[in-house]
Image 1 (spheres, rainbow, N blue to C red):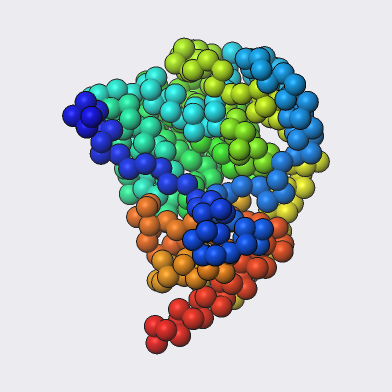
Image 2 (image 1 turned 90 degrees about the vertical axis):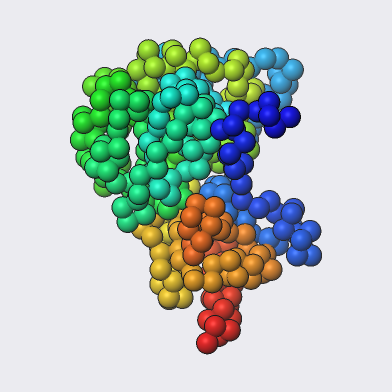
Length: 368
């Protein structure tokens, strides 16, 4: 069937998620209950209690097709926009794909940064367009270089803030100036999957920019701080016309009954969100201190993960796996010397740091 597939599809590499606990348990002969997964930026506190109860109640109606109305109304009220400015997705990845399928095709190009989220490349190429990768600046976005890369065929620019997998952050003042310089016919997709983890000094209500920049699409998710990664609910916020185009392409019922119910309840569980943010901030300091003690280089962290460097990254990852700790190797991003660790609970972070110190010492000793 290969000759029947589009050539640009054949050239794509499938997205590789973090290793699942069950696979690691089988591979290394470990007890699944003792394995700590810090590879996929999931909330270590799990699901919001209110969301869990809402999902259990929603099971009774799961034989019916889902109705997005209540979540759309709740999000609109929370964000201060009209419901017709919101596009729901099967995770925010779905909204990214909708943007590519709506605004890109053969002969067009999109722009993304080196070391940016792999889905940008996949979404762009699967729409038949060219993805222009701009070299990173200190492992983050070089906005001036991205502006310089714009051509008459540019239709989409992908920005992640904070960026995954590097964790870097673009001050919002720089993004606003960037928006002012981007041609109005170019859609800027601002991926804010980790927005809720930003500190007070860093956060800006980017939704307010939509009136001035109708070529802006903001994407957010319930997978991270809300703890609903397995229920797959994300959303985009845009000008009514842009949202309307995306909704024409969106598959009907792309968010399921359980996900919609869980997201609606999680949105109102401010105590859980506050506790998740506090645990993350404390855990970030704990891991940053531990990595400094171990002597490993790390990048500035603004989300719920930290990216750190080891010249023995592949071997170090294997040693961590044998110790029952799953982190994320970044060789697929062209960062073969780097690993990414999700911020866990205090206990999980301690176990990771203990295993890391032991594995790093063994690696260092063996290389001398």
